[in-house]
Amino acid sequence: MTTRDDVDSSQDEGWHEFDLCTPTAEHALLAKSLAEFVEREVEPQAAEHDRAERFNLPLFRLAGELGFLGITLPERFGGSGLDAVAAVQLMQALSTSDPGFALSVLAHSFLFAHNLSINGSEEQCARLLPGAASGEAIGGLCMTEPAVGTDVLAMKTRAERDGENWRLTGVKTFITNGGVDEGTLGDVFIVYATTGDRSLSAFLVEKGMPGFRLGQKWSDKLGMRASFTAELVFEDVPVPAANLIGEAGQGTLHMMRNLEIERLTLAAQGLGIAQRALRVMVGYANERKSFGQPIREFGQIQRHIAESYAEYRAACAFVYDTARRLSFTRTGQRVNADATKLLAAQVAKRAADAAIQVLGGNGYMGEYVVERLWRDAKLLEIGGGTLEAHHKNITKDLARDLSILS
Ligand SMILES: Cc1cc2nc3c(=O)[nH]c(=O)nc-3n(C[C@H](O)[C@H](O)[C@H](O)COP(=O)(O)OP(=O)(O)OC[C@H]3O[C@@H](n4cnc5c(N)ncnc54)[C@H](O)[C@@H]3O)c2cc1C
Image 1 (cartoon, rainbow, N blue to C red):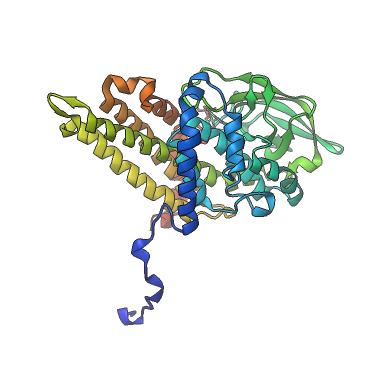
Image 2 (tube, rainbow, N blue to C red):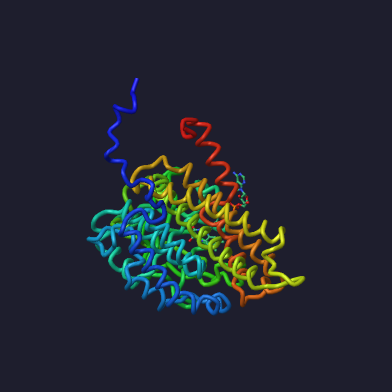
């Protein structure tokens, strides 16, 4: 039996100081740069772009210049080569201020660029990733169709081999970064389509390819209004064989490989929303008086604050711990990616809701931000997998392997 004397504890020193959210000096530096960027550049434009339902292209390009768009991309392609913790930091920080802008960054940096860096060839990465990292080219991912969302394997978009090309036909909808404005298509997309019998393949479709066009812009969205959501139309688009990602039939594998970072970064958006909601409600409860005392003295207000805080902290621990363990190349990490998003999405919505309640009538008004957070938070329960899809996946993964619990 191992006794305490057998244990070499020399490596354990300092573990009490370990910070889950900024585990290294590099993460701490990133947190500082992000906080400055958010305060100076993101916050002043957030309300206006939400109101106008407009994507902020200059801000996006600035984020690229500062290295925030290629945070997890290899350095040889213009990225910073950082890990999933850094990705979570980025999405949390942006979402404390402008979750809609953050969603555009997420679709570009993680659904498109990170996905390509893991699944694409050296040639494809060398050609497309430097432009993605700088923000010169805007990317996105096309999975959802008008008649098919959760049930991805039933998608109708089809690609047939035709000599040196594939011919791609179909319609994708709700595509973040599908356009930059009403008249301008985004630059480059990973598009999933069926090939062969029922297998999925992933293609790079670029602006300028004949038959590829912007369909309708989805305007009047509930939230995430600073991100541009569009329908994209593919009419017999000749996609060069060199734009097939990996092999034909590997689309589902690619999807699974990218799913974890996608869900984890969406969960991080939930953290940012909850954090901002807490800041607003605590500040307000300190200032606002009713019946001669600050409303923070009332038990019911304390309950809103305390429950939101406890849930926020629990979600932070779960999201950052999952990020710390995440490998970009391994599959089979789905259960916690789904579970973090399942939790953080709801924590965000409840915290924003509590904040509105604490602020009373002011909470209902745009000036106080929390109504925007509440509208934005709802997307996290739908996009990148609905709550019900997470229920299904988590139950399936646990039923298959109960050792996950230990
Ligand atoms: C603002 C926004 C941005 C988006 N960005 C992108 C993007 O960039 N790229 C992209 O490809 N997609 C994007 N989406 C699409 C998003 O991922 C889908 O909306 C989502 O996956 C759900 O698909 P659906 O809307 O077709 O709903 P459906 O799949 O039709 O689901 C409808 C309802 O049925 C439930 N349901 C379906 N199947 C089951 C089941 N087996 N068990 C229990 N319940 C079930 C769902 O949970 C949901 O409640 C975006 C959506 C929005 C709103």
